[in-house]
Image 1 (cartoon, helix red, strand yellow):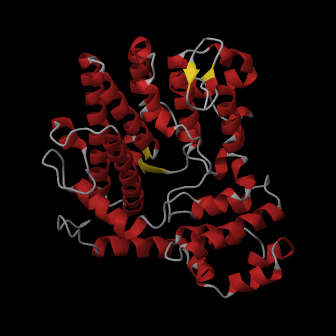
Image 2: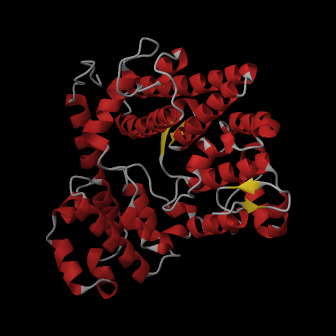
Length: 388
């Protein structure tokens, strides 16, 4: 297959820039409709996407580092959506091995380091919070770690050792940030945010592990030993809280947080960043937003409920979709009967007699208390650590 060649003479194996903008618009049309705040240094990537959307002709003249920036911006803006852009391997490895990398590697590395501080709060709902420190954690940190470790390997391979050391320090700072967040939430007995954080930590360190393997880092590499399999194997450099959190995720949350394939069907969910899916199983607030949304029609809400039900039937051990469904029902004056005209009759009857329905109508306070009790009762098989 012939490579794409831009007017700038940049050769690309990956997606053409104009098609990448199209994919962003499909996944997150709200980015281009003025819904988001794009001012400030840490939101510049969102402003850049809007600029190129209005000036598509300029995409023909971008160089390798600007294409890398565009791919980073595309993935940051869609990683929390239902259909993320498919540029993972480009920003983790492919572009770092481009024929012109020598000219652009330092700028790409600087973009990567800057991206650690990009403000992603408006483009994802998969978050856990440390209210006391005004700190947020999401799956975006996993995306960043996966790019940063690729950048580190490329810098080492191209003998940019000083910048590689700088990249290493920021990677370690991110690991330590997640460790401190988990320790803080456990200390404060914030059961819900701790559970959310374990799912996010497991995702983030999983991304890191995959790219360490992708780049073939030697098992004897001291840096690899320090950051590999952090949620799985005790590491003398870190608290056992990381392994404990990995086991908590495996026990309680891994079944909840997946690719949400069933939720790709209701395209109305892509209309606003308010509709982005959160960390499961804590989906009551999301369900309330969907149920109360004036910009969703009754038929669209019915389609969302069918998608939730279908998704749960594929994984009936999960509780998140029922929680979202139950919260939607509580926002309707007559519960599920309010949508009787927007749902097939047999679906309404199946819902009313299902375990899905029973899980959904359990009061939020009781559900969260149930989750907290299960967490308190759990003992980590690898560290013997408990929440209390």
